[in-house]
Image 1 (tube, one colour):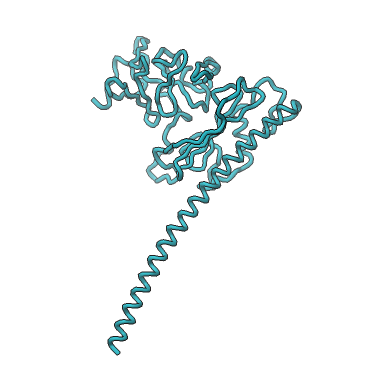
Image 2: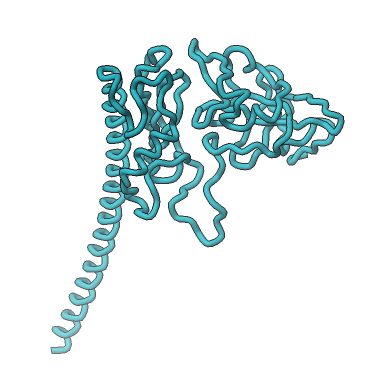
Length: 304
Protein backbone atom coordinates (compact mmCIF):
# COMPACT_ATOMS: atom_id res chain seq x y z
CA UNK A 1 0.00 0.00 0.00
CA UNK A 2 2.82 2.44 0.83
CA UNK A 3 4.46 1.72 -2.53
CA UNK A 4 1.23 2.44 -4.43
CA UNK A 5 0.72 5.77 -2.59
CA UNK A 6 4.28 6.87 -3.41
CA UNK A 7 3.78 6.11 -7.09
CA UNK A 8 0.48 8.04 -7.12
CA UNK A 9 2.17 11.08 -5.56
CA UNK A 10 4.96 11.05 -8.14
CA UNK A 11 2.41 10.78 -10.93
CA UNK A 12 0.50 13.74 -9.50
CA UNK A 13 3.66 15.86 -9.41
CA UNK A 14 4.42 14.96 -13.02
CA UNK A 15 0.90 15.98 -14.08
CA UNK A 16 1.18 19.31 -12.25
CA UNK A 17 4.54 19.99 -13.93
CA UNK A 18 3.09 19.17 -17.35
CA UNK A 19 0.14 21.49 -16.74
CA UNK A 20 2.58 24.29 -15.86
CA UNK A 21 4.58 23.75 -19.03
CA UNK A 22 1.50 23.66 -21.24
CA UNK A 23 0.13 26.82 -19.59
CA UNK A 24 3.40 28.69 -20.14
CA UNK A 25 3.48 27.67 -23.79
CA UNK A 26 -0.14 28.75 -24.12
CA UNK A 27 0.58 32.22 -22.70
CA UNK A 28 3.53 32.72 -25.05
CA UNK A 29 1.45 31.57 -28.03
CA UNK A 30 -1.43 33.86 -27.06
CA UNK A 31 0.85 36.88 -26.63
CA UNK A 32 2.42 36.18 -30.01
CA UNK A 33 -1.03 35.98 -31.57
CA UNK A 34 -2.08 39.32 -30.04
CA UNK A 35 1.15 40.98 -31.19
CA UNK A 36 0.65 39.73 -34.76
CA UNK A 37 -2.99 40.82 -34.77
CA UNK A 38 -2.07 44.37 -33.69
CA UNK A 39 0.66 44.62 -36.29
CA UNK A 40 -1.68 43.37 -39.04
CA UNK A 41 -4.40 45.83 -37.97
CA UNK A 42 -1.90 48.71 -38.10
CA UNK A 43 -0.74 47.69 -41.57
CA UNK A 44 -4.40 47.51 -42.60
CA UNK A 45 -4.87 51.12 -41.39
CA UNK A 46 -1.83 52.15 -43.43
CA UNK A 47 -3.16 50.46 -46.58
CA UNK A 48 -6.61 51.96 -46.06
CA UNK A 49 -5.16 55.47 -45.76
CA UNK A 50 -3.08 55.04 -48.93
CA UNK A 51 -6.04 53.66 -50.88
CA UNK A 52 -8.36 56.44 -49.70
CA UNK A 53 -5.82 59.11 -50.65
CA UNK A 54 -5.41 57.51 -54.09
CA UNK A 55 -9.18 57.48 -54.61
CA UNK A 56 -9.72 61.06 -53.42
CA UNK A 57 -6.92 62.45 -55.57
CA UNK A 58 -7.83 60.33 -58.60
CA UNK A 59 -11.36 61.72 -58.44
CA UNK A 60 -9.90 65.22 -58.75
CA UNK A 61 -8.27 64.24 -62.03
CA UNK A 62 -11.55 63.22 -63.63
CA UNK A 63 -13.94 65.63 -61.90
CA UNK A 64 -12.57 69.16 -61.36
CA UNK A 65 -15.83 70.23 -59.71
CA UNK A 66 -15.45 67.64 -56.94
CA UNK A 67 -14.20 68.15 -53.39
CA UNK A 68 -11.25 66.14 -52.07
CA UNK A 69 -11.00 65.24 -48.40
CA UNK A 70 -14.36 66.92 -47.76
CA UNK A 71 -13.41 70.55 -48.29
CA UNK A 72 -10.61 70.96 -50.85
CA UNK A 73 -11.75 72.07 -54.30
CA UNK A 74 -10.33 69.92 -57.09
CA UNK A 75 -10.24 73.02 -59.29
CA UNK A 76 -7.80 74.73 -56.92
CA UNK A 77 -4.37 75.74 -58.21
CA UNK A 78 -2.70 74.15 -55.21
CA UNK A 79 -2.74 70.68 -53.73
CA UNK A 80 -4.48 69.82 -50.41
CA UNK A 81 -2.23 70.55 -47.44
CA UNK A 82 -0.81 67.74 -45.35
CA UNK A 83 -2.64 69.22 -42.37
CA UNK A 84 -6.05 69.09 -44.10
CA UNK A 85 -5.49 65.49 -45.23
CA UNK A 86 -4.38 64.49 -41.73
CA UNK A 87 -7.43 66.18 -40.20
CA UNK A 88 -9.66 64.32 -42.65
CA UNK A 89 -8.35 60.95 -41.48
CA UNK A 90 -8.49 62.02 -37.85
CA UNK A 91 -12.20 62.73 -38.36
CA UNK A 92 -12.70 59.10 -39.44
CA UNK A 93 -11.59 58.06 -35.94
CA UNK A 94 -9.49 55.11 -37.06
CA UNK A 95 -8.54 52.92 -34.11
CA UNK A 96 -4.95 52.50 -33.05
CA UNK A 97 -4.74 48.78 -32.18
CA UNK A 98 -1.93 49.40 -29.68
CA UNK A 99 -3.79 52.07 -27.71
CA UNK A 100 -7.39 53.00 -28.48
CA UNK A 101 -6.96 56.31 -26.63
CA UNK A 102 -4.45 57.46 -29.27
CA UNK A 103 -5.02 58.29 -32.90
CA UNK A 104 -3.59 56.61 -35.97
CA UNK A 105 -2.37 59.75 -37.76
CA UNK A 106 0.79 61.09 -36.13
CA UNK A 107 4.25 62.50 -36.70
CA UNK A 108 6.51 59.87 -35.12
CA UNK A 109 7.06 56.61 -36.99
CA UNK A 110 8.30 54.95 -33.82
CA UNK A 111 5.01 55.40 -31.98
CA UNK A 112 3.43 52.00 -32.50
CA UNK A 113 0.33 52.05 -34.66
CA UNK A 114 0.95 55.55 -36.05
CA UNK A 115 0.87 56.37 -39.76
CA UNK A 116 2.74 59.49 -40.88
CA UNK A 117 1.53 61.56 -43.83
CA UNK A 118 4.05 64.06 -45.17
CA UNK A 119 4.86 66.09 -48.25
CA UNK A 120 6.95 64.15 -50.74
CA UNK A 121 10.15 65.54 -52.21
CA UNK A 122 8.07 66.11 -55.37
CA UNK A 123 5.70 69.08 -55.22
CA UNK A 124 2.07 67.96 -55.20
CA UNK A 125 2.83 64.38 -54.09
CA UNK A 126 2.59 62.84 -50.64
CA UNK A 127 4.59 60.33 -48.64
CA UNK A 128 2.73 57.89 -46.38
CA UNK A 129 4.77 55.74 -43.98
CA UNK A 130 4.27 53.09 -41.32
CA UNK A 131 6.86 51.16 -39.30
CA UNK A 132 6.20 47.61 -38.14
CA UNK A 133 8.22 47.30 -34.96
CA UNK A 134 7.37 43.60 -34.83
CA UNK A 135 9.00 42.98 -38.21
CA UNK A 136 11.46 45.92 -38.15
CA UNK A 137 10.15 47.07 -41.52
CA UNK A 138 9.26 50.52 -42.83
CA UNK A 139 6.53 50.78 -45.46
CA UNK A 140 6.55 53.85 -47.71
CA UNK A 141 4.00 54.77 -50.38
CA UNK A 142 4.19 57.85 -52.60
CA UNK A 143 0.72 59.09 -53.54
CA UNK A 144 0.62 61.32 -56.61
CA UNK A 145 -2.00 63.88 -57.59
CA UNK A 146 -2.99 66.13 -60.48
CA UNK A 147 -0.77 68.75 -58.84
CA UNK A 148 2.38 66.59 -58.88
CA UNK A 149 5.20 68.45 -60.61
CA UNK A 150 6.70 65.19 -61.87
CA UNK A 151 6.20 61.44 -61.76
CA UNK A 152 7.96 59.48 -59.03
CA UNK A 153 9.81 56.44 -60.35
CA UNK A 154 9.31 54.33 -57.20
CA UNK A 155 5.98 54.73 -55.43
CA UNK A 156 6.07 51.69 -53.12
CA UNK A 157 9.00 50.73 -50.94
CA UNK A 158 9.59 48.32 -48.05
CA UNK A 159 12.89 48.45 -46.18
CA UNK A 160 14.53 47.36 -42.93
CA UNK A 161 14.06 49.89 -40.14
CA UNK A 162 14.59 49.54 -36.41
CA UNK A 163 13.32 52.08 -33.92
CA UNK A 164 15.76 53.00 -31.17
CA UNK A 165 13.13 52.56 -28.47
CA UNK A 166 9.54 51.40 -28.10
CA UNK A 167 7.19 54.28 -27.38
CA UNK A 168 4.01 52.45 -26.53
CA UNK A 169 4.78 51.49 -22.95
CA UNK A 170 5.62 54.80 -21.36
CA UNK A 171 6.72 54.60 -17.76
CA UNK A 172 6.05 57.16 -15.07
CA UNK A 173 9.54 58.59 -15.52
CA UNK A 174 9.33 58.90 -19.30
CA UNK A 175 9.35 62.42 -20.71
CA UNK A 176 7.76 61.60 -24.06
CA UNK A 177 8.85 60.26 -27.45
CA UNK A 178 12.30 61.12 -28.72
CA UNK A 179 12.72 63.90 -31.23
CA UNK A 180 12.94 62.77 -34.85
CA UNK A 181 13.26 64.53 -38.17
CA UNK A 182 9.47 64.84 -38.24
CA UNK A 183 9.16 66.85 -35.02
CA UNK A 184 12.54 68.59 -35.09
CA UNK A 185 12.86 71.75 -33.02
CA UNK A 186 16.02 73.90 -33.34
CA UNK A 187 18.07 74.45 -30.16
CA UNK A 188 17.19 78.16 -30.17
CA UNK A 189 15.35 80.72 -32.30
CA UNK A 190 18.40 82.55 -33.61
CA UNK A 191 20.57 82.21 -36.68
CA UNK A 192 23.35 79.70 -37.15
CA UNK A 193 25.12 77.27 -39.45
CA UNK A 194 22.69 74.97 -41.21
CA UNK A 195 23.18 71.58 -42.84
CA UNK A 196 20.69 69.41 -44.73
CA UNK A 197 20.36 65.87 -43.37
CA UNK A 198 18.22 62.79 -43.86
CA UNK A 199 16.13 61.13 -41.15
CA UNK A 200 19.23 59.35 -39.80
CA UNK A 201 21.12 62.63 -39.43
CA UNK A 202 23.49 62.03 -42.36
CA UNK A 203 24.34 64.98 -44.60
CA UNK A 204 22.99 64.33 -48.08
CA UNK A 205 24.97 64.43 -51.31
CA UNK A 206 22.90 66.43 -53.74
CA UNK A 207 22.57 69.84 -55.31
CA UNK A 208 23.28 73.35 -54.00
CA UNK A 209 23.46 73.71 -50.23
CA UNK A 210 24.16 70.06 -49.46
CA UNK A 211 27.95 69.87 -49.31
CA UNK A 212 28.52 71.70 -46.04
CA UNK A 213 27.32 74.14 -43.41
CA UNK A 214 26.22 77.59 -44.47
CA UNK A 215 24.92 80.70 -42.75
CA UNK A 216 21.20 80.51 -42.10
CA UNK A 217 18.67 82.88 -40.57
CA UNK A 218 16.18 81.52 -38.05
CA UNK A 219 13.74 80.87 -40.94
CA UNK A 220 15.94 78.01 -42.17
CA UNK A 221 15.17 75.91 -39.13
CA UNK A 222 11.46 76.65 -38.57
CA UNK A 223 9.24 74.31 -40.56
CA UNK A 224 7.07 75.96 -43.23
CA UNK A 225 8.55 79.42 -42.65
CA UNK A 226 7.38 81.94 -45.25
CA UNK A 227 10.88 82.74 -46.43
CA UNK A 228 12.09 79.15 -46.89
CA UNK A 229 9.08 76.89 -47.47
CA UNK A 230 9.50 76.91 -51.24
CA UNK A 231 13.31 76.79 -51.26
CA UNK A 232 14.55 73.54 -52.73
CA UNK A 233 17.66 71.72 -53.78
CA UNK A 234 17.98 68.44 -55.65
CA UNK A 235 18.79 64.85 -54.74
CA UNK A 236 19.05 62.07 -57.31
CA UNK A 237 17.53 64.38 -59.88
CA UNK A 238 14.46 65.23 -57.79
CA UNK A 239 13.56 68.36 -55.88
CA UNK A 240 13.57 68.23 -52.10
CA UNK A 241 12.19 70.89 -49.76
CA UNK A 242 14.12 70.72 -46.47
CA UNK A 243 12.06 73.40 -44.76
CA UNK A 244 8.67 71.78 -45.24
CA UNK A 245 6.93 70.01 -42.39
CA UNK A 246 6.92 66.25 -42.90
CA UNK A 247 9.85 66.24 -45.32
CA UNK A 248 12.32 63.39 -44.83
CA UNK A 249 15.14 65.92 -45.33
CA UNK A 250 15.60 68.89 -42.99
CA UNK A 251 17.70 71.92 -42.34
CA UNK A 252 19.17 71.51 -38.86
CA UNK A 253 21.31 73.89 -36.84
CA UNK A 254 24.80 72.78 -35.88
CA UNK A 255 26.79 75.83 -34.73
CA UNK A 256 25.00 78.97 -33.60
CA UNK A 257 26.03 82.54 -34.34
CA UNK A 258 28.66 84.08 -32.08
CA UNK A 259 27.99 87.13 -29.88
CA UNK A 260 29.29 89.33 -32.70
CA UNK A 261 26.99 87.65 -35.23
CA UNK A 262 29.71 85.60 -36.92
CA UNK A 263 28.65 82.19 -38.23
CA UNK A 264 31.25 79.49 -38.83
CA UNK A 265 30.96 75.72 -39.23
CA UNK A 266 33.00 72.50 -39.08
CA UNK A 267 30.68 70.71 -41.48
CA UNK A 268 32.29 71.46 -44.85
CA UNK A 269 32.53 68.47 -47.22
CA UNK A 270 29.78 66.61 -45.34
CA UNK A 271 31.92 66.40 -42.23
CA UNK A 272 29.05 66.25 -39.70
CA UNK A 273 26.35 63.86 -38.53
CA UNK A 274 23.30 65.07 -36.59
CA UNK A 275 21.57 63.30 -33.69
CA UNK A 276 17.87 64.26 -33.59
CA UNK A 277 17.19 62.56 -30.27
CA UNK A 278 19.33 64.98 -28.25
CA UNK A 279 20.16 67.89 -30.61
CA UNK A 280 23.86 67.15 -30.87
CA UNK A 281 26.16 66.78 -33.85
CA UNK A 282 29.42 64.95 -34.38
CA UNK A 283 32.33 66.30 -36.42
CA UNK A 284 33.35 63.16 -38.29
CA UNK A 285 36.99 64.08 -38.88
CA UNK A 286 37.66 64.48 -35.14
CA UNK A 287 34.98 62.22 -33.69
CA UNK A 288 34.00 64.95 -31.23
CA UNK A 289 30.36 65.62 -30.39
CA UNK A 290 28.93 69.04 -29.59
CA UNK A 291 25.65 70.47 -28.36
CA UNK A 292 23.84 72.09 -31.29
CA UNK A 293 23.33 75.84 -31.19
CA UNK A 294 26.60 76.82 -29.51
CA UNK A 295 28.94 79.05 -31.50
CA UNK A 296 32.14 77.56 -32.86
CA UNK A 297 34.27 79.84 -30.67
CA UNK A 298 32.57 78.93 -27.39
CA UNK A 299 31.49 75.32 -27.86
CA UNK A 300 33.03 72.52 -25.82
CA UNK A 301 33.04 68.84 -26.84
CA UNK A 302 30.74 66.55 -24.90
CA UNK A 303 33.30 63.76 -25.30
CA UNK A 304 36.70 65.50 -24.82
